[in-house]
Image 1 (cartoon, rainbow, N blue to C red):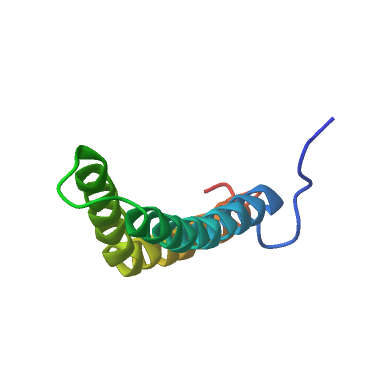
Image 2 (cartoon, rainbow, N blue to C red):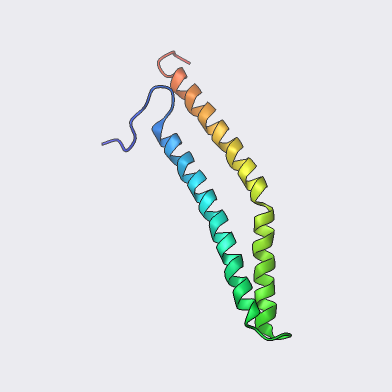
Length: 99
């Protein structure tokens, strides 16, 4: 039993993997946004100059660094999707031609 049937032109498995990658990218953005909102609420309840506030500040800085890199990650995802689709199309076209 095959998990994915071959569609004309593009492997369905490649399309499914790309859809999952795009979904994961969107979920990552939501998690980062919600995480920063939660950390902001936690920081407001802490007293100044305590280890807890330093930990919260460091966690917020880490989330901010990841959010700054999201456009780069998105660009890498798009280029990976284009390359994967091109490889899938050329692989399918090459079948049966003796290449």
